[in-house]
Length: 44
Image 1 (cartoon, rainbow, N blue to C red):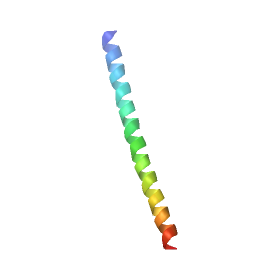
Image 2 (tube, rainbow, N blue to C red; image 1 turned 90 degrees about the vertical axis):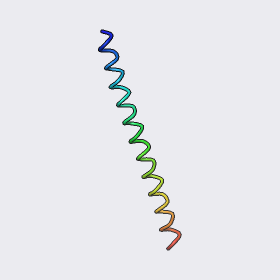
Image 3 (cartoon, one colour; image 1 turned 45 degrees about the vertical axis):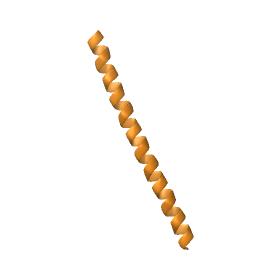
Image 4 (cartoon, helix red, strand yellow; image 1 turned 90 degrees about the horizontal axis):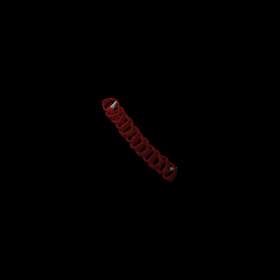
């Protein structure tokens, strides 16, 4: 029982970390896209 719980917790932690990475990645892409859009509007 004890072992199952710790392996489950480990898997949950892995999923959370992966989710955080994706969120950070998407935020960076979003920020970059906004900058690109802004620069395009400035240029025109």
